[in-house]
Amino acid sequence: MSNTVGFNIMIFGVAAMQFTEQARFVEHLTQRLTDSRSKLNLLKQHYHLPEHVKRNIAISVVASDASDALARLLAYLLDNPGARTDHISRDCAIGNVSDTHRKKRALLVLDRLGLAVKCRELPACNRFGGLGTIGHLFIITVDNRYEDN
Image (tube, rainbow, N blue to C red; front, side):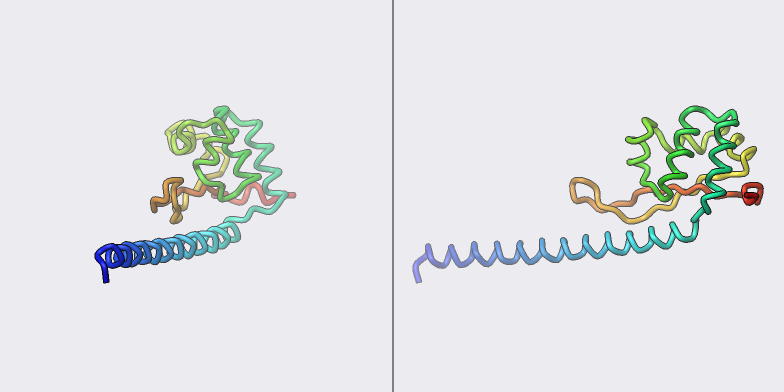
């Protein structure tokens, strides 16, 4: 066997190993994303708000002294429970989503409204293929004031 043929076989073997590793990585990512979707669906069921509650919350938020950013966030979460924080930032023009609902003034407004914003982190992949987590936000009621029809 010539050196060229042996070298080509070695290169092919290395390429095959790299392909196998990439295939395993893709399989791992696929499973990770499938698990995240399943967890997100369970969370959406757990934090589900009936339509009449959403309507009552929306009315209360409009009448409140919530900042524009907090009002946009809450309106968005009423329509998109479990939304990813990067999507919220993009769609609501909010630079720092967590500040919008976690700063002192926002917490006071949410408390007066009988609401809280809950963040659940789930595994995710970034646009570069890196593994990490991403926050998904939900509105929760802390009392039963919105239950009336």
